[in-house]
Image 1: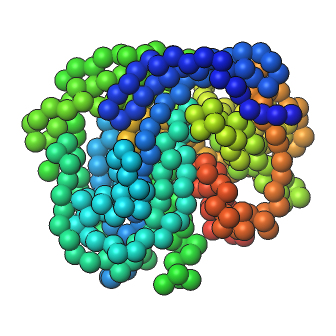
Image 2 (image 1 turned 60 degrees about the vertical axis):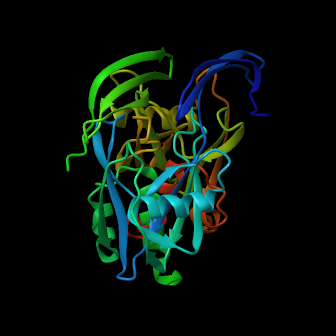
Length: 180
Length: 180
């Protein structure tokens, strides 16, 4: 059975600064019709950045949708037309003050695939150099560094609630000894 | 510095079947104001289900937001007022035909925390019994089973693009030998 849903018509409900919202009327594989609510996002990048002291850099940031702060690896939205690896280097430096000459792609994931096309690229960066923090004007965060030896117990505590950060930390436990 | 953003006012832009969209005017930590676009979702559950033959059950499903099929662990939306573990058992049986008496929570994550409050609970289920597949009328999927021994190479291939599924598979590699 073919799984594809063909778009019969679409309605733009909202066109915003971070997201757009559309409603698509679709033809299902069995010929019936249904509606899909679609959130469109330009995409995001994130960096698992490891300091020369074997620490992971994290940012604590207030997330309005959940009304609480989350611990996350440095991340940000792609600008229109921006190349993903450049965006990741830019976000890392803006949020943490660290410069990475070389990034390695760990994975690219959809966090909410049921309704949103936001793809997050997750990179790992080693051999960091000091640069200069330069936050967006509506961005406020606490920077901290976690020794790699503490990541395992942090995961067990289930304090990491951000999907990309959990993926990056599990990747670290699975691979870091081999990639040093 | 306090990171909290206080809501000054909110506007409901869209109230839909899966998501609602709001725009919040907020006061930033420095006293300035800004706007946040917020997608509200009732939450979701997912299950890393392991058969007696040491296979992981996955579903291939067309995701309209990305216009492609993704390989995911069985998952679904919480119904209003529904308890998460019950929802996970229900979704597992509806999508795969397998019944799990006991689930263990692996983690709970936000996939798109920058703008969406959708929290996905990820459970692991072993000791499965045969039940009966019963899909929603607008749900179409291909069911398959992946031997646990193949999960590592599947992760390396970067074919898994769904965040919750990647988290579950990494968890399996990190923990399964110990939890058998």
